[in-house]
Image (cartoon, rainbow, N blue to C red; front, side, top):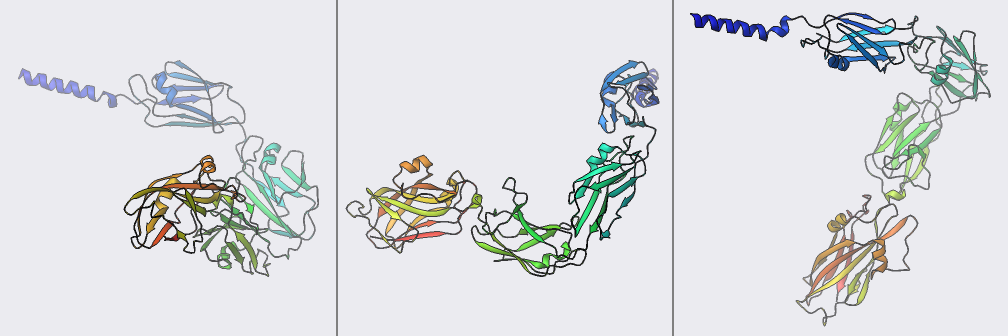
Length: 492
């Protein structure tokens, strides 16, 4: 019986200790004072380490630094520059805070307070000329009236007029209204847009409730929309919007930017745009601005090939003015960074003689002297292939060359195998057997040579020696040839 009572006592004691954490009351914030500094009263003394981690104070969204003073259940936080007038403060104490018995807050404590008397946000009461007004005479000024006085500097930072105009600002006595006075005459037939962002604040640092836009048209706009074309390329720095000129220099990875001098029905443009020869295109309109859109191609344009981008007539602006003629933009995608490698010439070092290999073989003959190239006897030779590549590339890609270059023979007239292959540096090319001082690179290009070690075994039969270069051959920028090349020679 005594053993049973002892066991029950131990169980009760263990239960009491294990439940102590939830039997004790949680830590609570009893009060907060924000007169000169932040004074917080807790239900129990918090630990310094946990409170420093759990505590944060911001002023208008910016974090504040300061000093802590702990006095039992009261904690004082003094911001470095004190509490300033005209601010919105936000105090947060997270559940990381705990007392010396390990009891923490049940939930985050949040407290928002202000050191400004006026908490209302400014609003735009009126604007003249009113939104969507059409004017025959130019306005003397653009007048904006606010619900309360505003900060002049914040208004200047928040104001945007498009198209931009040179102007001066004239404020009323309490800065609740401003006149924007043009210095130069406005352009007739132009729609102007006035925008004020939420960067505008009143004298108590309250921000504008929401941004606003207002437009007015000066003069009778009977002109059709004007269309402009530019390109933007992810691989060419600074190519955000560059005119696409008829003489080319457009990168092959470009998207075309179609823009107008006014808002148009951009949602109906897709059916009016085409390119010839066809590349397959998609037009993505800017439905917010309504004066531009992006043209992307599903196929990569061929380098150096002329294309024509056509825009059919009938593009309408918001006043019903329409383009009356088809528009054509000639394009050539021949920006130097995308120039494909081009085979220039080659050479086969046959004994001491370099036999030239050209792109137009016309089934010429390569002679193999049977006195030197005896039947069933292996001989080593060097094959050189020279290419013109863009000057922007470092060299040809050796990996692509290994997969693209091959040599074969027909009718069993020879056994040929490639043993070595490497891309020559410019210095090595200048000292090599294939170097030709008379052959100079064109503008924006350089010459690059590949040296191929061959093992050749002659057979007393007629046939063709075929040198093949696949279109996958590329330079260090990834530009590939435009097509496969086959060079066929009669074996003699």
